[in-house]
Length: 232
Image (cartoon, rainbow, N blue to C red; front, side, top):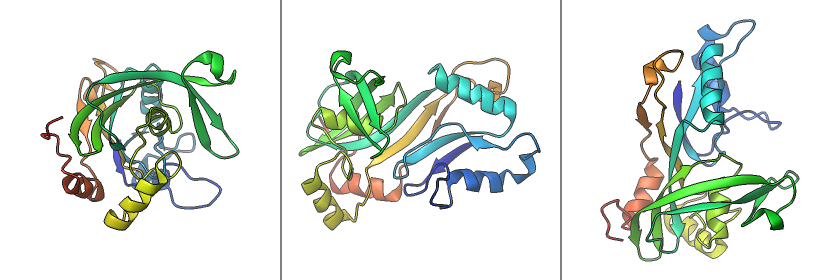
């Protein structure tokens, strides 16, 4: 099952007891629940990131999804708007360290500067449109670490619009005032499945699935003149 999660909804439940996407999925797939297996999400998105979440309806399906996520054969693409002009495709590599106490991360350009338990990260981005001091990016998340896209782009001087953890506070206040934007503009809009002739993934073998942009995201793109046809 592929679900288009709205921004503001937890992917999985936490100590707060708030309703999560996983709760919604369990209710929707109640007939699939057995004493030995419950359907569940297989990947997570930050609360304020929208887009496609993969869910296993059966044990075999969950195992197959977890495998292609782990071996990175499923390709995940995001759309975001960042501060500054980016005119060329680029591949970013670095090392990400998560502070569990604050639920924030730091990005280091090389391992020599990073803590021992930092994780390697790789992010590929392509500009789709540039207008003024903003860029619409398509981002391929090669490694899927906590806050990776947000922190990686911010570390290069291109924070995401609306990102209160890693972004530009002055810019965020303006976006809140002008567009009522209270979260980062980040949408997991495309998933491309690998070729698999047999097994639980056979029906989606080689297929690509797209989730439409949320209304708020599309509204801001139009206001900033950031359509994909815009000249870079």
